[in-house]
Image (cartoon, rainbow over all chains, first blue to last red; front, side):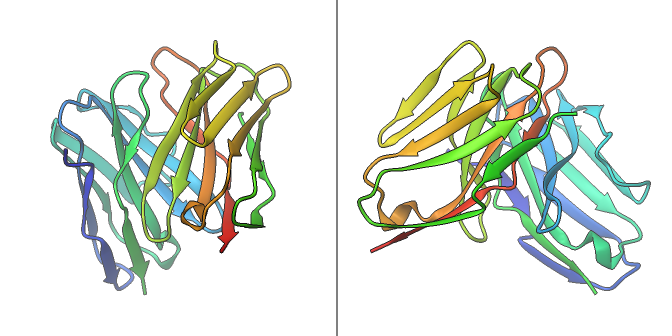
Length: 112
Length: 114
């Protein structure tokens, strides 16, 4: 079975540019989560969806961040404009109700 | 607000030793607690999930326990191997219903020496 697929694996871009991270959840999973991991703050939940609908976006740091899930097999996390402090590893995870979350390998983002 | 703490931050043991990783949480009203493994440059792999009504879960050489009253969980690894070297994170889910958030600890980096 294919796991959660994230792209790109690595992204390096200059400050001010738009960044789009992509995620394909495991087929049939109805929950999708976006996390950010840094050395200073550890793993933080940014937003999660249930059946393609955003349920809780209280972890999104500011208006520069936005996330969409146009269908059950695809989600994006967008940062516009990007800043150096956004540099982190961004993870996508998916799950079924009350079941363990399955994580992708992450996108390592560096903003110069 | 739920806080999850893992001590120690790093642990090094010789191969073959049994070891215990600790996880504590401040809000005992958890729905479940999950242990993950993270290898360098990789995502998290779920190891064990303990529902709030359970006391422990076992998978192979791994055993996780949960004591809600004391706000603690432990992950026991028997007969450790170099391949067990990774960062281990615990995460507590604080409520059922519509909330699905996991609050993560900062992890324990385990090194098993051959």
